[in-house]
Length: 304
Image (cartoon, rainbow, N blue to C red):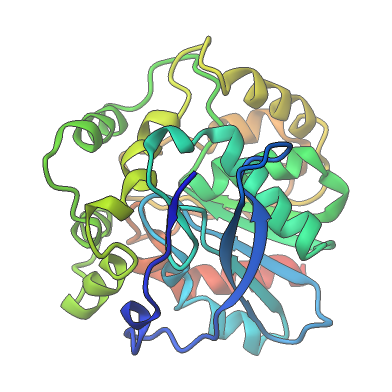
């Protein structure tokens, strides 16, 4: 595995992102002599506070949470926001075959459980942040105090995905260009400023850095015999007994995940009696459109 590392100067003076970087080394392929990967994460707020874990998806990075981190910290919380391997300031393996759903879960497990040893976690995940993060909840539910998700899911390949997702998957594999910042902008209900679009492009100096972003949509299980479908079914078995608070905060303008809250309401005991909310005026990237509002939802959820 030959990872690339985005030069630091690409992250200098990004709009609204004053946070200090933190890094940890993880095994690239556990059990094999394949070297290590450097993974980036933000760690803001008091170190002795219970952590709020914020996980991004495709094709964004921890920059997506810049509107949410300050109010969460102001409320007294420690905030951890990692960059998935292949994104942000984390290392970027150059071959699409280097990336699998299982490896993404294992890479984050090493960071969050082995290196940071997080516990009493409040988790929020969106897009692939949910697909990876919910698998981690199922791996070690005792580490979690509560869970919140928005615009995500845990697919097992039963039922056809939304037409919007299938179009996105096709685009990711067939489009000659893959303009990350413009893709994020297209997934928002609001138009992003040029410097914000540039910040989403920052981790990717050229196409050689985009292998992880390119392949990600194809790793979503869309058939029952997908390699990841069994693992997700096993995760659902755990979540079907998860009775800690579980909050749904999907947005109202995301065609990709519309209706994705229904399986959680039906199957996860912890959703019962919770103040589920619809984030109005939010597109797929609701953190970008309604970040402070979503942060307030999480603050109230933790305090309840």
